[in-house]
Length: 501
Ligand SMILES: NC(=O)C1=CN([C@@H]2O[C@H](COP(=O)(O)OP(=O)(O)OC[C@H]3O[C@@H](n4cnc5c(N)ncnc54)[C@H](OP(=O)(O)O)[C@@H]3O)[C@@H](O)[C@H]2O)[C@@H](O)CC1
Ligand SMILES: Nc1ncnc2c1ncn2[C@@H]1O[C@H](COP(=O)(O)OP(=O)(O)O)[C@@H](O)[C@H]1O
Ligand SMILES: [K+]
Image (cartoon, rainbow, N blue to C red; front, top):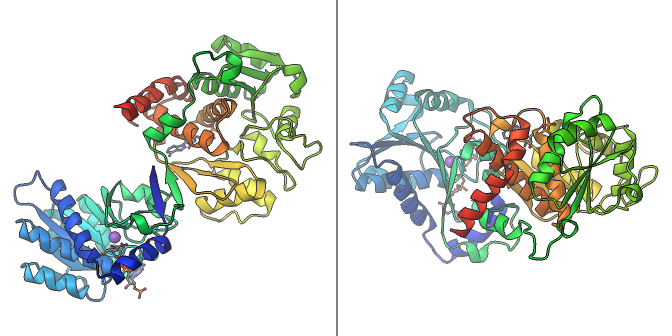
């Protein structure tokens, strides 16, 4: 499990160590220098430039540069603020390094100097940084981007809010972020996560002082393996879980195929599809194992045993199946809230049927993309301009459901106010119509197997991302939505193998 902490939590944890006189900056700089040296193994006469701010983040970078000089690596610095961190500047000068003032540097000189270095260390601001790039630094950052030299971010990419991930336009993307003491929440959240690259955590002995509950969690392969439902020796199709899917309309019949394939490939005991006959014909042609229920509405008594209900893919908000499905899952609100089905997924058109009076349990998962989340927020009186992480939390609090907010980084907000989960396993090849329908089916199967809402949502998002990566050969090749569903078993296999090895 990767745990992400806010700036406030990290500062509180480091306080007792600093009070006890622990040289945290020296420790951080030593680890940083070691990591930079690893990245510089190939070049003959390696060289580094540190973009240094005046705070402790700049101090880390400058001390690391001094240590790198001791290892024969040419390391110099450019001031990215008025003045340098005093102790760091002194250490670098003593080690023979040069400290350039940005305002004295001609833009062409800057460009040619950057063209010669093998690595840039971004030590402008760390956890003390606000997400805005000062105007005087835009030329410098643009020059770094233009020359294409790899960047290592010190603690966090500069101008990323370490708590929320909010990133200033123009902030530098890093190949790796070497982060100190604890992973910052912003490195796992949209914005920061896209800029951080690989996150390398340096242990500073903070663990005992960090709060027991992190702000953000990311499950690893071992945790997915532990939670993924495997059939017991004496399992039956009913004990594994029956998922019923109200999806697909004459206008969007394919949604039922995609959702039911996502569900079936994730290990459902039985997949039922409730749809008009024309849609069922298409579904059964592709997935003969599906049990079809030709019906205009969703009536649990007519359907038979079911453990989770997926409502919405390929349906409009006012389809009778949508309204009946949302009512069955809701414990309050709507015309006939019945709470008869305790667990399920509300996706696509189903989300448009949710109103301010609806309430759900945490084992109901709402799966909006940002556009759907914005529309839902507006109906529920929530500010739609909130950053994604805050929006997901607000929607979960307002509905009582678990909210899975889809995107390049997918977020899962539990309704009980527990830590937000994030996932970064996906590839942008998944940005193609219908992949969301597959995800809804996958989450439905995991709920039917008995997983709690937040686990079902997180595992579905992780497997969906990995299946997308496999199907697209790590993002190289285009995929179609059905490919994602078909790659779920193999993706699960790689996760189980990595966790067990
Ligand atoms: N956590 C740990 O255990 C350890 C932490 N350590 C290190 O300390 C770092 C935190 O250091 P820090 O508190 O000195 O703040 P830091 O990030 O250097 O920036 C503050 C300066 O930047 C400025 N500034 C802010 N935003 C700006 C902007 N947009 N544009 C321009 N300027 C801006 C702000 O000036 P202001 O304008 O607010 O006066 C202020 O002067 C942390 O990230 C880690 O690297 C390790 O050494 C040891 C263990
Ligand atoms: N740039 C991206 N990087 C990674 N995953 C993405 C990206 N864009 C979309 N996705 C994923 O693809 C899926 C798209 O779902 P959705 O928008 O509901 O599509 P549809 O409604 O067509 O099925 C989501 O799981 C989302 O997280
Ligand atoms: K930084």
